[in-house]
Every structure is written in structure tokens, then in C-alpha cells.
Amino acid sequence: MKFVKDLKRTDYCGQVSQTLVGQKVVVMGWVDTRRDHGSLVFIDLRDREGIVQVVLDPNKAETGCAKDLRGEYVLAVEGIVRARPDGMVNTKLKTGAVEIEAVRAEILNVAATPPFQVNDENVNEMLRLKFRYLDLRSPRLQQHLMTRHKVAQHVRRFLSENGFVEVETPILYKSTPEGARDYLVPSRVNPGHFYALPQSPQTLKQLLMISGYDRYFQLARCFRDEDLRADRQPEFSQIDIEMSFIDVEDIVSMNEKMLRSIWKEFRGVDIGEVPRMTFQEAMDRYGSDKPDTRFGLEIKDLSALVASSGFKVFDDVIARNGIVRGIPVPKGGAFSRGQFDKLTEIAKKAGAKGLVWIKSEADGTYSSPISKFFAPEKLEALVKAVGGDKGDAALIVADDYEPACNTLGTLRLHLGRELKLIDTTKDKFLWVVDFPLLEYSPDDKRWVARHHPFTSPTDEFFDDLVANKESSFGKMLAKAYDLVCNGYEIGGGSIRIYRNEIQQAIFRVLGLSEEETQLKFGFFLEALKYGTPPHGGIAWGMDRLVMILCGTEAIREVIAFPKTAKATDLMAEAPSTVNYDQLNEVGIKLTAAAEKFIADSKK
Picture 1 (cartoon, rainbow, N blue to C red):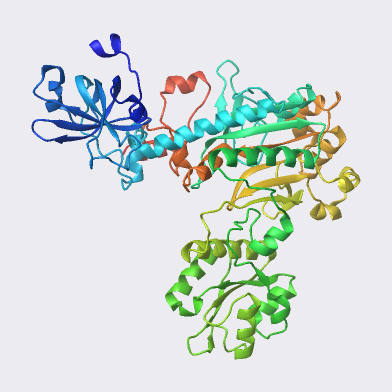
Picture 2: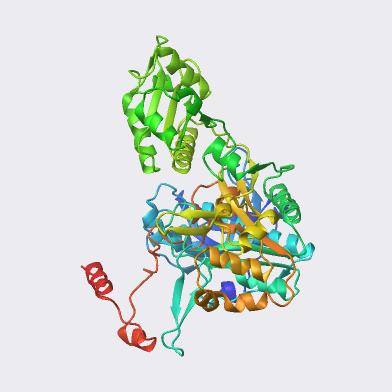
């Protein structure tokens, strides 16, 4: 094999340009397409940098392999770069003004007929995931992963230049529950004991602040055993940041600086200052703590307008201190009953018990399932109150605060996409601040942390927390902040608790006994005794960040080897069973339910 051994590649296919005209080059890659013109064979040769056209003479010994070439064959070519003839320039390729006249060529390896063309984006996703190594050859995914690499390099450079130290933290660690289920790893040398894969390096990065490293970062791998969505995976990467001797403004300022740097580098735009909005305002106006502010359809409060209306659904909700709120539907007056039924189904899936709609008909009248309870003038007033006009419609939800907000937020996003109201040419950013510190879980019948148990309350609640004053729990605010872009949370963090007595008070509020606290967090509480500085941090979702920069809505598009929505790897067929000897070594016995699942999966 003369190529590779003696003749080394001089250029990537996608980087052959007019500056190389007349020069001899060696390129190597995969055959993308082959066009046989009899006396000459034209191929598009592809590598990670792009495609270049190669011209081969099948009648010459040195290039006679041209007649054997097929798609995805691996080929090496030595040739002369020449300008394409007039009228033959391909403006769709960055190498389209040149081609390589092959002097010699060699097939380095053959390829079976692939199950799909690597540049075909209309292939079933399950098939593409099964043959991920072929899909990764596509220009689309190669561009995405190259962008991911460049973002990682940019972030590392930015943080290093701003005094941060990159520190790797353990993957095998202690189970310290943070909201989702842990992935557990049994210990063979300590039977009956388990490591957990980290949901985040939360306690570890705080320990680094106690250790005096002052500014830490890591592109950290994290693992959460939870249900998946298009923008979520069981294992993911985050840009993990922690700083000492700071407060909220310091974190926000540093991260805005990095955000501006990223968008300038990868989008070529100056995003300016990022506005802020409290959690309460975000929920009131958008029904979400990560609102997409690229379009309107803001939520309006209708409670005063429908009070004492005689319509039992509204009256009962208001009587129990619930809310009646709505959003407009531009041109919704033309919607059919079927379209409103579909919106009702969306509302129910979001947690609502039902949905009220009012629409302005073409003849100027108003129709609604609640028409018999409200005069036409009141129906018109309700449409106008949500921001609608003639020809529009209103969607109204009556429920307790959170389910009503969540439902209207879901409907708002659905309408924004369906009615093409979202300005996708712009990115809109927002800091959401002043989150509740705690929320009550009716299922568990106890208070739980809104973010995680290491988040500091605002200063005015310290005393109430230590005194275990339950009447204040629902009012407590956290020094927490989320960075939102286009309706995605791309970063979230908080100022941490750095005083031992406050941390122990939080654990008591969360219902942890002294024994549980020592078992799960004893090492951390011990560390807090030895001079802990005020500190805080943030974690950016690396995958979501790159997803937005690449203009895709599926996080799998920016991860080399992603999982499906069922947390499976179709390519490697993981997770998989292991033999009983391996299980016995780590002291694990399968339950009857697990044995049945395995048996059923083999049928």
C-alpha cells in the first residue's frame, strides 16, 4: 500500500482551493458519488472538511481502479489541482471552482452497500441511530460535532484567561440525591456497597472552594436516571463553574461576559445586556420559568372580569384562591371545532381539567361553549382582555396557580410554533431570578428544595430557616438564577450555603433525620466547619448550548453517540444483560420482575 505508507496526505478534501491550482496534492477520503462518462470517471471525494471533485482516467494503470469504485469506498488520490472549465463551477461547494486530475489512485478499503445515503436527511431516525457511525459521516453531523469541539475550546480558553482552574472530579462517587434518580455502580471489593455516577459535581466543586481554588471549571460528564425528552439525555455534559468571595452580581456579570463572547464568535452578533425577570413575573406573563420571549401571546389575568359570573367552574376556582387566565389566538376566529378540540387535548395533557375557548366569528358575533353563561358583550370583553381583536380567539384556563400557568405556557408555545409567530432569526436571552427556595410536595407531604439543598436563601430568611419557622417556608426566596435562551434553560446556578448551621437547617426542613444527614452528607457538613468562603456557581448545559448554536431542536444531533427516548443505544444494543458470574461477583441477584423483563425481551 504505497499510499499511507509512502505518500502522506497533504490536504483535506474540503480545503483544496484555487491557491493550490497547478500543485500536486494527496487527498484521502470516502467516495460520495461516482459519475462514469466513459473515457473519464468523476467522483466526489469526501472527508470531514468537505468534498472535492476528482477526475480519473479508467484506461490508465495508475487510475484504473476508477472502474471499481462504489459509494463509501475509501480512496487515496495523488493529482494536480486545476481550475474547473468555464461554466462548470459548482457554487454549492466551497471547492467548487477547482478539481483534482488524478495521477494515481488506490482503493484503501471497500465498503458494503450502506443501508442509507449518508447525506440523506429523510432517513428514519431509529435506522440512523442503529448505524450511527455512518450517520456521523454526514456533513450535517460532522459540522455539529466540529462546532461542539470549537465551543469547548472557546469556553476553556475564555475561563482560563479569566483565572479559572480546570479540575476533574470523580465519576465514581457517593450517592447524594439531587432530585433525579442516581445511576448506581456496585462495588466488587466492598460487597453490598455502591458508588453513584454524579448527577453533577455539586458537593465536589463546593469542596474545591473550601480548598481555596477560588475559581474552578470543568466540562463535566453528568448522569441522571430520568425520563427523556428531545433536549435531555441520561448522560450529558455541562460547563461547570464555581467562584469564591462573590455574590449574585459577580456570577451574572462573568457569565454574561462569556455568553457575549460565545455569540460573537459563533453567531457574529453582539447580544448586549441580558434582561432580568423574576420567577413570579415569568410565570405570570409566560406560564414558564424559562420563557421564549421571541414572540408575544402573554398570559392575562381574567379573574376580576369573570368574578361572580354564575359560571360554576370559574366561581369555584376563584373561591378557592385559584386563577382564571387566558391568552389570545391570532386569527383564531377561523379555527374549526376540531382545532379547538386538539388544543383542549394539549391542555389536558399539560395538567388542566379543561379549556374554555371564545372566538370572534366572521359576522362579528362571538361563539363559545360558555355562551349561555355570558352575554355577547362579556365574551367580546374577554377576548379583548387577553389581547385579542376581531377575527381572533381566546383560550382560558381556570385552575390552581401552577397547573393553570403550566397549561397556558404549553398552549402558548404550541401556538407560537403552529402559527409561525416565533422570530427564528434572533436569539433572545433572559436571566430568571428570585426563585422560591422551597416548594411543598403534596405526594411526599413535605417541603422539597426547588433547585437543590445547597442553594442559599436570601439573607432576610436566614433566621426563619434556623428557627424552623414553617409559616415562612413558602415565602422564602433563593439566591438562584437561570440563564434562558429561546425558551431553553442553558444555564442554572445559585449562591451556595457556606455556613454549617444554615446547611443543617435546610436538611431539617427537607425532612432528613440527623442519622440520614450524617449518612448522606456528613463529610460535607464536616468540611463546612473549616473556614468556608462565600461562594456560588452555575452549570451550563453544554449539549443544549451547542444545539441552539447549530440551529437544531434535537439534542441527539449534537452528541456523537446518543441514546433513544428509552435510554437505549441502538448501535451497541445497550443496556444489555450480563452473565450471572458477573452479578455474583458484585453481590447482585435479579428480582423476579427483572428476570421476566429479560425473558420477554428475548421473545
